[in-house]
Length: 334
Image (cartoon, rainbow, N blue to C red; front, side, top):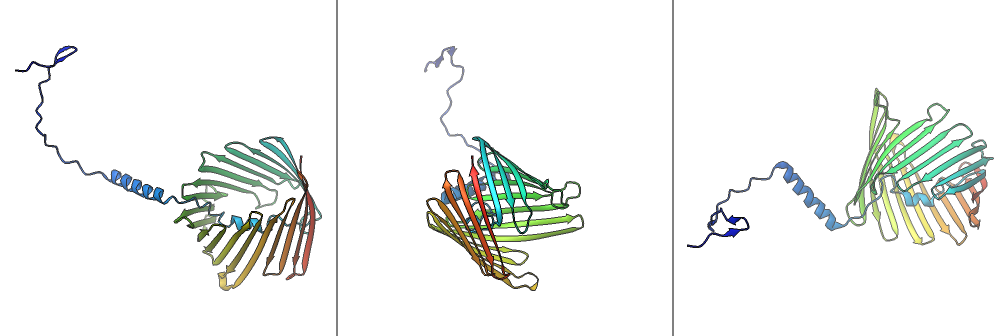
């Protein structure tokens, strides 16, 4: 008879176990939660294998085209922007404008703070209008934004809250404009943009408007974006009867072109406007030009005289209305 095994504390009280196989009960079927988790993991694994790019934001699908247009660049009269950088994170701006045909002379004071996770800016003009903006990045993919405007003019004050989330291959954005928790009024916007291939992205946006407790309206918009090696093509349909298509071409590192056509069919109307714009960057200057089918021709030239100082010349001719405007300005960073 074999001697019992010894342990550091003496004889082992556990007898020898038989090596015969032991019957086991069949595993219980996974619950609904486990099945959902498994399906979710399979979907994520499939998406990882596709390696789809982030499509950007819904409202920014035409960002490259808009940069070639002169919507935010053309002006008339005289203007001067002086920027003083006080610290690497903080700067102030003094803006003067005079001689404009559609607006009186004005002065605007602005501040901006740029941190690692936050961005703050504010503006105050001579009419007493105050604008403020704050962004905070909770992570590289999750950003909260707040914009506010306070005006002496009735109906011009505004509050907008926004949440933006950038996934690996999608973007979700939620906005609330003048939301009221008392009666539920305001404008609420939700958008989603998803990459479905390496070049194609599809998205939708819902706009819910409730200006008064007894009045409400919901509209839907859809967009498709195709990104090539050096071009971007987009098409967008808005529920109230508007269709737009845009095309952006990066001809070279210093030459960009953009074109857009807008069709309006709401209320029995049949209107269309096509716009073509171009941006040309030279060694010490930048030229932007634009023409559309209404007969409007615009151009802006920015000449960099010395580092930190630029001279601007802006002109626009509206052949359809027989009107024109001209402006000069300068930008100085000290």
